[in-house]
Image 1: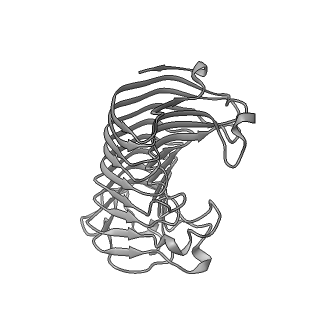
Image 2: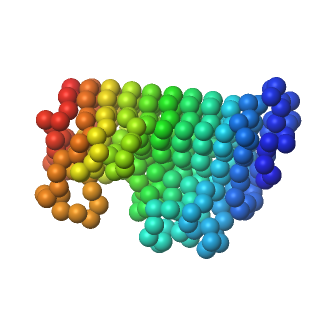
Length: 306
């Protein structure tokens, strides 16, 4: 796919010029780079897109990258096949994201399926006013780092009426996630909906105004989780609401982890300096697959209302 800048009008394009159609194919890297296009660009997917499996594409790149575009949409009944099994055995966090939205204002992703991503299925960074509606995400339960949607430094993100079956977080919210609405999703298998991990790097932006509601978690490792690194730098997580959620055989339905770490002795770790305030849990029901349904391991550091 060529760069889109030569095709863009600052007025609303015609029905034909605003659509890029892709059917079954195996592209290398698809990149829409507009230099801040303010027209309307639509990507219609009515077949199956196959990600590269070349060893040079196993790390360090994004498969489908959309950068600095306003008024963007993806629609259709097709799918993105990340062919992740070619890369999952590589021990790195730097595997390709299937589709990354970077500095996008006003976008809608509707109807498509993403499966077997090498890393995240969708990445949202530096965006505002983005809607994911009736999407489906699928990857094996043991596939590493295959988050359904990862959000960072973005606001006004809505994820509704969607289903996630993956090997990591169904949805993860990184630093700078604000005004996030997650409504009517089904999550499982996977690691639930996670805020974090937070506090690992200097100058991280706060996370605030997040609502997760009217959703179901089935057989997940976690339900709703907030996780912050031990020995972290200060930041805030504020105004979080988890409402009307059903848990079905979830190992840890409710978690706030202030000593998040990888391959470490948690007993020797100090609590995180990320301050968590104004967290509300309301009408969370169902069954836990373990004896501990609620794990607040640092309750004195935040104000939570259940």
